[in-house]
Length: 128
Image 1 (cartoon, rainbow, N blue to C red):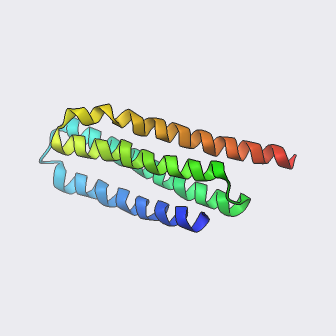
Image 2: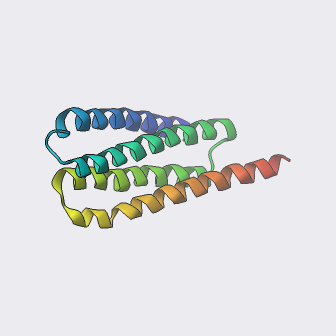
């Protein structure tokens, strides 16, 4: 679990940098200020949650894999795809209906963090 999610996290952080650079250099002059703000929000959440995948992987390496950590990683990954992906496409295409699926990615982020917190809390209680 550790190697898989750390690899995915590293690739996703690289993609966040590349997608952010693309927006800054290629899109800034082509889409409006509101659309670029939406795009940048997608990049910000993408990067934060890709780094979170690295943290989940490191935690699995330190504490061992668990079903809660696996769900945390899956949900953070899904959140990046749905939340950030919908914001990228929305900002570039202007397809407003995509704004309706963005919150699904936000819920995935929240659930992923909850699974992570529950796992770490439970393991801490088992040690004391």
